Amino acid sequence: MLAKVWSVASAGLEPIEVEVEVNVANRGFPGFNIVGLPNKAVEEAKERIRTALVNSGIEFPQKKITVNLAPADLPKEGSCYDLPMAVGIMAANNGLLLPKGKMYFYGELGLDGNLRHTKGVFLLALLAKEKKTKKLFVPRLSANEAAVLEGMEVYPVKNLLELIRHFQEEKKIKKLRVIDKQKILEEAEVEFDFSEVAGQGQAKRALEIAGAGGHNVFMVGPPGSGKTMLARALPGILPELIEEEALEVTKIYSVTGNIEPGGGLVRRRPFRSPHHTTSRVGLVGGGAKLRPGEISLAHRGVLFLDEFAEYTRSSLEALRQPLEDGVVSIVRAVGTVKFPAKFMLVAAANPCPCGFAGHPKKECVCLPGQVMRYKKRLSGPILDRIDIHVNVPFVEVKKLKMRYSEGRKRETSKQIRERVMRARKIQLKRFEKEKIFTNAEMKNKQVKKYSGLTQEAENLLQRAANNFQLSARSYYRLIKVSKTIADLGGEEKISQQHIAEALQYRIREEA
Image (tube, rainbow, N blue to C red; front, side, top):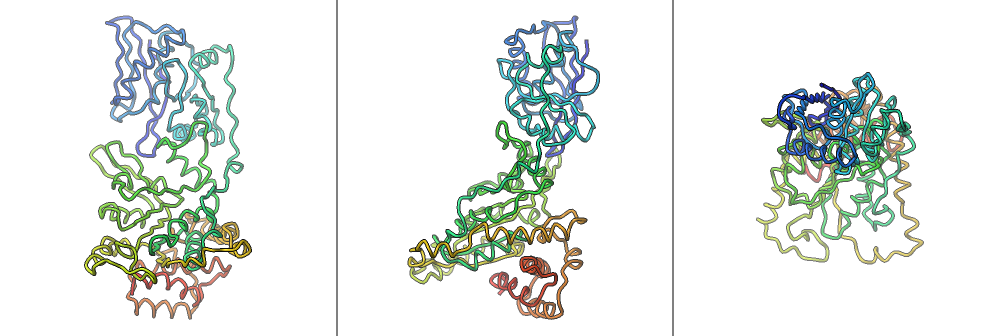
């Protein structure tokens, strides 16, 4: 007898419907064959399914079983097909009567018949919504991922016996209620507060501007000046993910298995900080299975690259396209995928190999040739794509010996965050028809449309472009940063002061 159930596969981050056809034949030698380009994990499902059915008290048919995962030309991988294949075998062997209508099954089986937490459930929910199919049967520990989408009938399944009783109408599985997305968008838990950072007023201001407009930042300073501390305090001033952003991030984290059991919508802006020994594939994505890299895991959040000049040249050069387009395209013999990568790059580096060039107390021991080679590790095109360049100077010990009353005078992350959120709200309203969220995402056409420069600001911009020989990219990025500064001040037009402040973050590189 032939039975059909449905599941999902992924091509990059795109869900593709998979029809699981199961045929249990009385003729022929007993056996269990899976076709349709299964990988090793899918092939091993034979033993998991057989043992899970037996341990659940369900007879495993000693017949010729053939499973086809269609479309047959699409590679299938992972353990998520365990449940649909087990259901198909029971239905084809007359052991389970499925109701009419399309339903999706998804999940990995344990040998005891229990369903384990399985990555990619949110992708299944997106497919079901697209196909206008409501019923989803997924592992209980992964069900919250699907319950964030409205209109879905999500059935959290604990084990095979529970599923059988549900279809036999002995004991129905309770549908999971749709989760209110607005209630679970929480503020980020951060390591440091901006009030804990001694001095560094210019760096704090630069990060405030970066957070308000989604701009990239490059901090240069000696060891111990607070670069890492500032970067790790940045999430505390960023606004919460809006619903559309949260769904985008959840999609990536679901496919990569970065959502914990019982987790649902990703609540906080990502903060990724890969080590400088990370490979190009680990940073950008790709590999044999075409998986997202750190830049995609940082989508709508922060990618912090400490010791920026220590990354391999190939890794840094691979950031060019994502920094410009907000997406990374990976082409391989097995196919082409696109991963979203709209992240804030926050980079930090020492001024020289020893780190003490320009230090007021310590002498640099690097030879001129060493310093030159060190700086050449960062190419002009990469630096050109960074909006804000800021120096983080040495902090004297007397500033670190802070009395409690002095600490209270410093601005907290909460105070800065309020200004950042006001600026972001202005941008959301400005771009509500443009499908972008921040000033940093503007293309040249949108820069011309929304910049609103005063005549004085335009004159200063032209003089700066000529004097510092700004590239076309730097020219437009300078306007974007100026627009963010204007938004922070609640001003509609870019004035001369806004251009002047934005310019100080570029002349370090261009001079």
